[in-house]
Image (cartoon, rainbow, N blue to C red):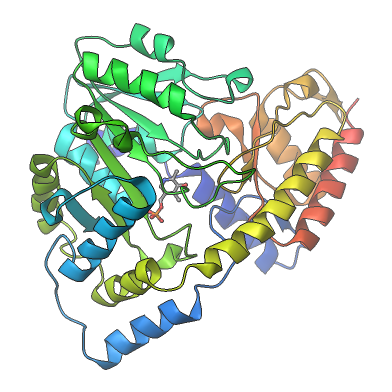
Length: 396
Ligand SMILES: *Cc1c(COP(=O)(O)O)cnc(C)c1O
């Protein structure tokens, strides 16, 4: 009965883990949830007020499909100010969250016979969005010793006649690592040489640490800019995950195709959320600093605690709000007579024995790791790592 397409797709494993944690909590179990993929902060008051104003003003009807001009202008200003890249209105489209932006790109660009290069570990939706559009994901492994940055030479060795695009994500979910300029330049060279496109998911650009400054690959020159689709959104930087506003900037032919596709699926992103997004982008930005300082304190604490657990090691993330510890040294130890041999098994063990929720690395394409989000209170983090320490200590 179901289409072949539908059969290829699995539900988002991160959302599934989060749902499980919420269900345990609802049944009265004291769970510590490291599975969350959204800031634990409320949307700032000025942004909420802008949406309330929009409702009261009756701004509640269809808008232009690709977003209202004042929002596009605010996005264009953001690119100019933060990334030193210039775009015009017909090079920008607003969609219902960055995930939707990425999906529109997939629909506009990918097709049967195309290969899309995805560095792994990867964000969970990339492979499935490629599959949903009949193209083939080509995974290229990245390594902890390189801070999980894709090696440009290794990238080139995976390029074939069928390669259409490569998906980059810096700062990265799940690794929390960021690309430096030199590596991005070398990747851009490969992309230009082989006439590929870059899909650059920059949703965590505002969340960086240790003085690291985010670099957009589109800012590295006009040639690479003309082959790049920059995806960004409001969800992470402004704690607006439920508002569903994301955007893409790139070549106008592709943006036009995405707009046509969007016109036949969702139509415009929610009118009042667009008004809120304008306020987020042009209003005071101090919220981000406050949130970032809080994340930074948690990051330092969590990384140092994880590294104090025997058999666990974690490199320091420079962006986003995830720790991605290596747990492969635990493989071969036993939990109640069962050999620990996968990240899913370890995640299940920690869920059952420690009431701690986290996401196994195999969901992101690397079974030697687990992902912990520190978008949860310091109190929870303290309680959670204590429990992990104790449960891991019981492995023999
Ligand atoms: C959260 C996230 C997104 C999607 O964000 P929305 O705008 O809420 O759809 C996209 N990419 C990555 C890597 C993310 O972590």
